[in-house]
Amino acid sequence: MLRRHAAPLTLLALVAGLHLPAAAQDKVINLYSARHYQTDEALYNNFTKATGIKINRVDADDAGILARLKSEGSASPADVILLVDASRLWRAEQDGLFQPIRSKVLDERIPTTLRGEDKGQGPQWFGFSTRARVIVYNKASVKKDDVDTYEELADPKNKGKVCTRSGSHPYNLSLIGSLMEHLGPEKTEAWAKGVVANMARDPKGGDTDQIKAVASGECKVALTNTYYVARMMRSSKPEDREVVEKVAVVFPNQQSWGAHVNIAGGAVAKNAKNRELAVQFLEYLSSDEAQNYFANGNNEYAAVKSTKLSNPALEALGSFKSELIPISVAGANQGKVQQLLDRVGFK
Image (cartoon, rainbow, N blue to C red; front, top):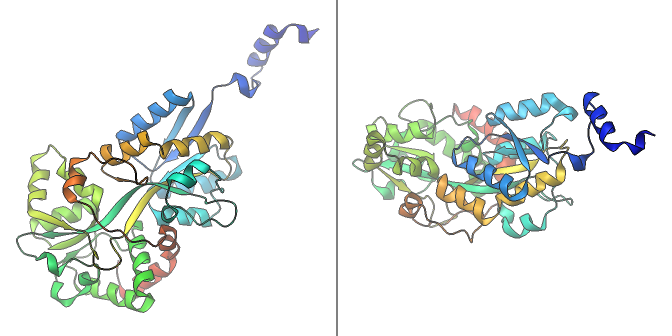
């Protein structure tokens, strides 16, 4: 009898708190994101408009997201994870927080150097935007030729001139992890020791703080990611423009292996309940539309090489040669790098 009364049964199910069949429910993915950029709002809204898939978002920093995933375990509602550094993505993979992804779209559009290692079932994460780790210097007191390689940051000629954020910050862990591939462990440790000897002050603050310190004369040279520089170049604040006028940027190692490039990337959570929708979202992040938002809206470089650049700040910085080692390798070296930093006192 009840089967002949579909409408009353549906009402009864709702009253009883029972779940409707999946076909009757809205399509939704749960996104845990460490990206906190206004332009990303347009990304999410456009994805929903194009696909009908709604996004429930949890924002936190990378460490907070990874801690939450671990505490939630198999009960986690997370479908997609977005993080902003290769070392963090690699660590999450090692901690068993992601799952392999097989996607023809991602394989075709994202370079192999910007994704996790494929151990036979597909990579567990992909990079969707990049940023170069460059050197900024005070134009009034430093010559470009004295700071156009990472190695020169450790040269005695730059003693008392260098400032940096914490060596243990993932941006620096990834950079030094890549240096370890290029120079070898012993030379990289000697380099880190030299950088410590050349510091104008103890490491502190973020990348923007380093740029301001160079402009003010507190130090003469520093490391930063390109999008921090580009953001200040495009700023309408007079104080930011004043800082930019006092500093110059160099892409390091253009005559050798090229500048270190890091990523912001995404993965499907290990216990994702909406796996197919999650992969669809990641594929969207590789689309021309999304790549344009990353490059021209948020001052990052696109992961997809065919993306047309129309960002005046990035265009002003110019083209550059980037290193070719897989970013996953730099991330995998972070444990050895941290031990190295502890030995040389790079706080």
